[in-house]
Length: 117
Image (cartoon, rainbow, N blue to C red; front, side):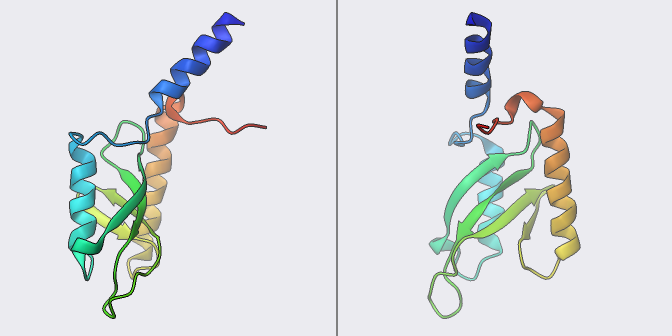
């Protein structure tokens, strides 16, 4: 029983979805997403995750459009200095980046939170 508790605690602590301010990959991802937006200053980020131990970041951004209204959350993937936004013109790039994120997560299974059954 003690081993189960220790393993559960290790899994919980190894899955830190909240980015640390000094973590450069999150700063780079946010900067890249902001550069792709109509109103970079309006960007509101949520659900930021690092895909395994890689420099691939996935998350959501809500920002103002050309009319000054917020679009609602849009999923993005930041990989290799490129930003791929869900629903944008580079659909194949988004799919490839999403597959890469999944592959990076598979390489580090201890960081994947397990859903309750």
